[in-house]
Length: 304
Image (tube, rainbow, N blue to C red):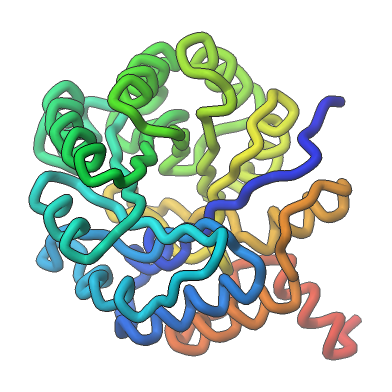
């Protein structure tokens, strides 16, 4: 079994996670969560998004989050940008990396962005060009890579086509998102092998939601195929507003624990990560959704 020696974790909890929690928290709390995640060893963190607060009120004032964060060597803060208006806000806020997204499902694209996949990619080409002009790095997402809440199964060839176009736009990395968490290991394997015919493996990442408890086995398959970047969310924060019932991303604690047990380096301090999870859980008034976090806390408290 071929596995990477180290895996880069992209922490998406402060953005993809919090934007799908019903309770809103202040920019100050969001910034403190990011700081705690940095303290836990996370080096690449999505800290917010420049979408309309009318549609995603949880991400309002993302510029204040960025402004509150100190530059830390080797740590990257990223923000999601949906269009040129958001791009302008990101530039004004001093963002050094942005993320853009397109869907592999026409219906999801229409429901999510009110435009077709082709129109979405045309918009993103303008965003990417503007980012290049300001020397801002661009990371890409493809949504619904293993299933769509409206169309069902998604053809891997469609995913490969969208991923290739994002790659050609200049995205340094394309994250393959199982938005509704329906994928299983064999489907994930087929997907990655198909996309890798058009996009180099070292330009790919995976982004699994854990709706059916398949995120960890799917992640393992991705690692075995040569992918070494995984998106995760502290405490399993989030879901998807356009996919009713979808669970949050695979918990950062789950992935870090699995990789540690396999001798794969992540740079994450699990105890500090648990503290970051405790912090945001307390602010949200939520219970843990990470079994690893629950088990480690129970063990620390002398539980059986």
